Image 1 (tube, one colour):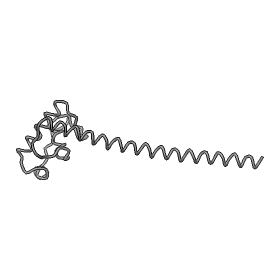
Image 2 (cartoon, rainbow, N blue to C red):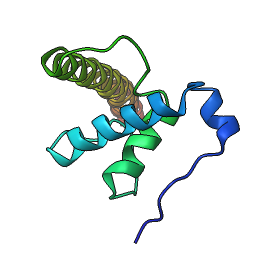
Image 3 (cartoon, one colour):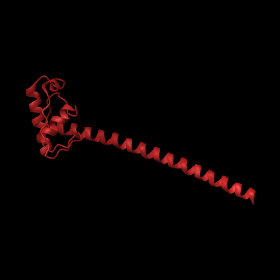
Image 4 (cartoon, rainbow, N blue to C red):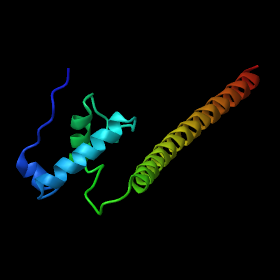
Length: 124
């Protein structure tokens, strides 16, 4: 069972000077998580309040102007799409690099095979 995260006030001050604002934001985000919103951070915590605090301390959720649930949901969805795009691009680059490396190795093997056949025909 995971323990609840309780950050020190010094760490909280880096995020906000208002404990009230922090409580409201944690409460609203935890409610969204309970309602099925996926966490924005990798965490082993299962408690929605702890996850919300982690997200806020990680600056995945920022303090800002109040917004409607619709605007909030759109913002969260846009952030997810953006993070997925970054992940997709990273994976595509990795696959491209692996493909190029495999092609290079394949070319080297083909060159070695040609050289071997040429040396065998010269020795014959």
